[in-house]
Length: 319
Image (cartoon, rainbow, N blue to C red; front, side, top):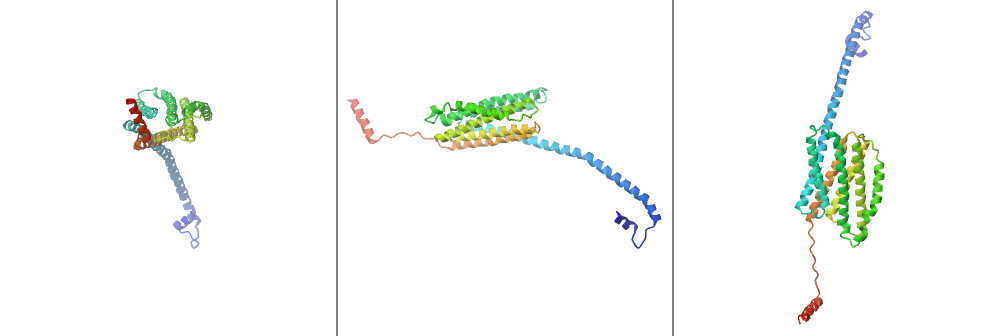
């Protein structure tokens, strides 16, 4: 400030300061200082008014982008499920795992039903109130269907191929008590910080069914490895996809409770991304299963002594 005054008014040691000149300049300096402060205040007030609007606009853009990503991942996952059903029909694999392809068909049908509800969202005022409980009912039904699918894998991998099938047949029922107890303990440890009651029930159902399905698959893996039974490509792909999907669903419920019900699209993206990975695994499993050549039926060959004995026996019967 002092340097600028020296440059402007030429006050140096060679030119001493005149008190009369200072008194003339002092009011002008006050006016200049007041105008500078007023200008700074106006600039700050304009920027402060502009800042929340800019931030709210950026938040709107971010939420819109996340919602578009959420819908895109959801559509991709269900499109992969439809591809799984189509490949099963085309490659004639529906009879090998009928419960699995029924599971996929119900997922695709639920997508169509969800699209219809999305179109009717503005016309039905009470739709938002019952939508959460519809999702709860869907999760309960898919949980029971998933358990039936696990038992189908047990039958396909172990019970129908092992010579010790009669011994291992009651094993799923024996392990059910321990697995249900484990699922109860895990669901009881959930924080349950979601404000909506339907979401709490849905998280409990999803976590419980995920723990039970993954536990039964682990027991099946241990028993099959102990007996020495191979899984096959399609059952192994189905089991791996179930583990990926259930893990994503349980992680999404934990994230929803951690966020206390806010920012639900992050949870949706996590769950649907796991479904996309599971769908990719299932498609690859069906394609690889189709490339495996069918086992030829081996016809036993009799030895020459057996053929001679059989011919001799026929000649004796003809007499």
